[in-house]
Length: 283
Length: 200
Image (cartoon, rainbow over all chains, first blue to last red; front, side, top):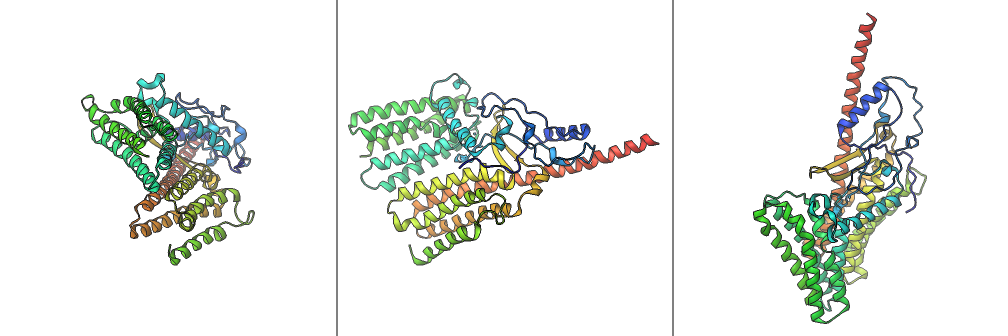
């Protein structure tokens, strides 16, 4: 899709609270100026996208109002800001969830569609890097998936299902359906498990994390698709399994009471082991 | 696939393609956006209904339908919501580690200036899609096809998520406007009183 020309650009500021809006309303009424306040810089974990500051030229052309005092109509109310998107998210919802939803500089609402796509894609990549690969933020798991999104997990689950289904010689549909349902339901149940153990996690953040930790298993499944030797498969899957569990460990363990760590971690490990078995056993 | 379901499928497709999408410039302010808004929804539904004629493989049906549905979710949330009705919603996790749902809307004037046909199309296609998925879900439940229930479940979740998100966003926008309106009135009254006293 090419650039979509907005006839009515959205206003944006950096805070989304109603208080902030009321402050701005008061300021605008008192000062009777037709300018919009500049936005604050984004918070650290976000990915800066379009680095241009809020430009007044984004105001809609029909602002011919004289500088009267109180009849200031709400035309300068900046609405709440900068969405990194979820999905399901997705969004989700996908992740989502959406979602999802996944701050950023104020121009994201008037950006062309291609920018939104690029921003979401880069968020998937950065989330993946944060979760699966070693990086300095791993000690603080709350920071790791601050911008959760469900698109990455969605693609990984579908891809894993496709890989498993392709390797299967019979009953391809059922393999795919089972793999998808197992992973999706498993992620939800694992999250509920942590919540019921009295842990402090956010539902979608945990879904997102468990989905991203599937990445090593996806790679393992790809390799197993290409090579048919059982011993190689076992080795590859064990390595992938260890990597997945290592990726999921800090987040899950910090979410619960230390005495219940094992209770929270064991089902995760079990799920990844069962997926590993699916990968090995498919012929 | 029995003939009645097939006819239903064609009817749905016709309604979407010929009654909802009008040629550009006729009545809609953003015809391209409207088209894309409807395209993926209709595509997912049509593919799901008609695919059993052409494909034997469940996997392809699943992947394509869910992919179209996910694309539709993204388009509605990010593009057509912004452009057709001026609303946007997302979820953030603040510094305390709590999840916060954020809603955003255009100011009242711009909202009033939005094309009525655009927003009519936006909301009605959202609702119609969800109802269509529910009906299809009932069909597959009746036939005890758990596989197809899975597809319907995923697509329904995505549709409902969008509906809930945008409805909350619209309510939030109305609430904000009412707050602003009452505040404007309050400040106007107080300044009138002040000017009255200054004259005295």
